[in-house]
Length: 544
Image (tube, rainbow, N blue to C red):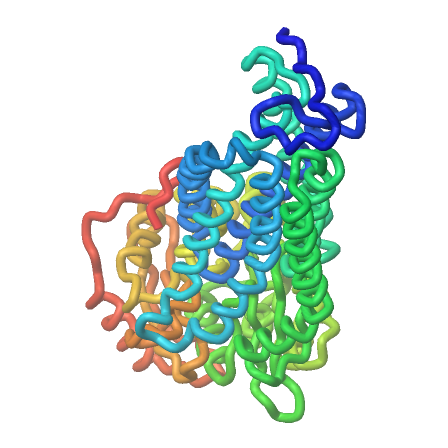
């Protein structure tokens, strides 16, 4: 180990290459630098996870968005590390400036993304991709700043007490990786559930600027000129003021942005353990809209058309025992219970918060006809795939898969060959399975991939689609569908075990608006979009 240089005489100008003039012992100084590395690493990973979470929520397709964020950020970190070489001669001042900018950019990133999503995503044209462009810009900026931290911190820790490069790198990276672990766990278990994404990001920025400022202005203040100290202090206080003001206005901002996204008639907006649930209207004669993670799932008069088309063709045969996978809003159960001969309905829903709203909210419970209060209905809170793996007991006459579109990454497993194989295991020999397979016209390959997957799992299928009327009912898994000119439709596949496709018929006790003529025409319309030769989707090779 190389011994530290002798301290500079009093009144000498700050040294750019010699040992740091610390107010504490070198060992204590190194410890404080490593603590700052730990905190900054935790903050950096929170920014990264916050961008991934927001991108998945606002844009959809979590695998793609996570890949974009992570790849751009890692690339930018490398560029930032190279760029920081020019700041090594002013390591303390450079690090303080980097942390101030990083705290401002990272702390405000969630609010900026939500603002662009809320007020520009529906404009079309160049603004239609506004959230995606801003996501890449934030990933690039945050990556550049995080990458610049490491060489500057390496320079600072070496100026306290020089040691071999390998030992210094080991100490620095150990603190960095442990901090990343803490940040990675804090985001889903503390920040997100208790503070939300907006306030959580702002608090992270506050911690970031305080840690960086305390290290530079406290430990390395003697390495800074008087002008540099005041500049960094004023910059840090300005960033703190901006973050504090944003935190104070976060509630009003979120309400205004929510109204821009969902309309002004929002009654309920809750973040459950699974998703964000927003209810708009549903009282006073106003149509009910149900949004799950920003995507409209129930909208106006089209809700009846959707659930009627989903459920009723499957109930033309035996239907004493019915299994609904998803459907925690109770609307599919409402349609099932309208048929005579139904003795038991089992609902397997992942989100208990949605089930609770379906029972207690006056608008949603009225829309589902208080179906969840019917003694024939039994609700289980579980993942549908996991539940099917452990299912025991009598077979079901009908299985209704009322699940999110296959284009959403989180639901891809629910449209896999393995999933349908498990569904076939709980289905009676003459039973029927009906699947909501997403929109047909804008995404025909995804729709017919579901059909190919069902056939691979041992089902024969009859496809059909139903057109929607309300312009607000999203046709796809993300908001980009709202600006699409394609017809708004829902695609369904009625399946039965074996090689003979089930007949598409309206039940004899049918009392809705769906007619046999409409159903036949819907089947012909779906057949007109057929895409041949598509492989099945599996858990290890999803194809949506």
